[in-house]
Length: 416
Image (cartoon, rainbow, N blue to C red; front, side, top):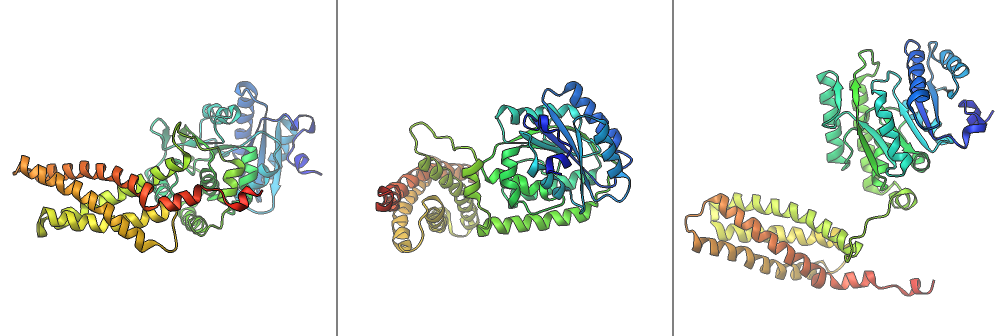
């Protein structure tokens, strides 16, 4: 029997299937039939695309599998597959990998997410606007009923994802997600978790691959009979975060290849090269960090040594760090030449010092009794001006040779 037949897919309609919705279950004999019938009725009466429901039984030890088989035999467009090992991620991986639908999705069997969100979840994928769609309980317009413990843990977990993996999606754990099937087939071989962290790992890879993720605010009611061990799941998720973070840091994941395969092309700013735009963004991020460090150092030293020496030391230290960071991350320079670049960077530093010291001198002449907030405000404005000058000089003078070398075609490239 083929994989499609095992999943209950009709060969006559497999090639025209729009959406396959997987419902992963483990020992859900009490809720399975009621939830599947409710979902099936919604798809038949209110869903505009051709859809398939697949019940994925994760090695249940009760009557779940027999109920799933009965539902598949009774209801058109319902299939069932049985796995010998537990794991929601394992079930989704297996079913999504062989799906013939254009879009693959899944939802929890308790249907905690109101089905009214299903259309806005699938529509961006069917229209081509987005590649991944997730239900979000943390959106400001979401309506959520759940206990404070789950609420705090969910928000803390998503904050951890933002700070450690630079994730920009708001809710990694909501059991209500969909993805273009071709994107899923490209990413799934690189997703290793077979349990609850599967969602997070898939979303991180999708985002790093350049896929567009649509977020749908949902109405969500917590299932009081949930069998999820919250603390054990939280610890497993943290281990998963550490594992994925290490893999990204070491370059173990083929993110460049995945971006080329499924990612969206970068938008070019008219009249601005993509390299210049990327350099400007990286320079700005480093500049923000440098400015914060500069202000902290200035405030710390101001009371001990006075305004002008504090400005000198703070600007000198942050300038050295700024040059090193821009050399490596903004302009992609490594290896020899660091001392020369730092020397040139000190010239740029002198220009910045003249701008900031000059602004302090002008402030002192205009308002000898200026308070600390005004003094700091003037320095921020002067630093912004110095930042623009710094970017131009770094790009066009300090690292100009490196930039021209990178943009010039090599002999090998010309001979191809």
